[in-house]
Image 1 (cartoon, rainbow, N blue to C red):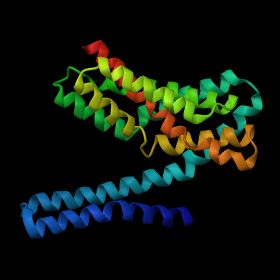
Image 2 (image 1 turned 180 degrees about the vertical axis):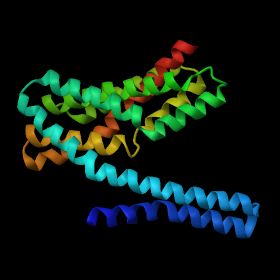
Image 3 (image 1 turned 90 degrees about the horizontal axis):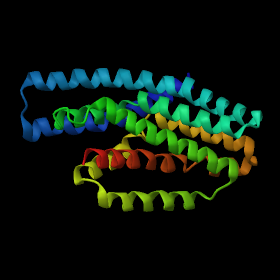
Image 4 (image 1 turned 135 degrees about the vertical axis):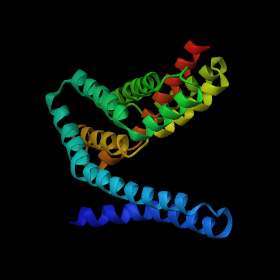
Length: 231
């Protein structure tokens, strides 16, 4: 019951400010047709219900399962299994991420189909999956995160020299949309779960955080490489 209340408050805090601003603009400036305003309010209602059910499902299902998987994997004492599972889960949650699909659809429309949404989703998913696997390597072998972050962004800026300008913009957007409500809870829970078994309890939280920042480099590099191919 507590989860339901917290989720309701979170949805209200996210959607109400936008709704209020649009209504104020409607009264003061825009003067949209009544039909358009009603469509907006109906859309707000549907988004609120969908977002509420989505977040409730994430809290009740994805987070606990992600953490349980993260705690069970290290007990197998098989590094390849931990890394491979990180790759597969990173791939799956990115393909399911709504933000990624919205970006892919918009780019498909703007490019008149020359950059298909399917190719874009798979490129982003592969990029994130590879870097989630790299994050698992970092946790297993205690590699300082700043080494991997610096190395990753040096590679990003070096590659940007050879990439068309349009793909540079798309690549950084792709890095942003992977930090959505599907990928973040699951990947963070997985990282914290693995770290809590491999590290001392006091160090587990610091090991688990930073994983999303590291993983989001993957989609940037993947879209840049795609841009090189399209050049």
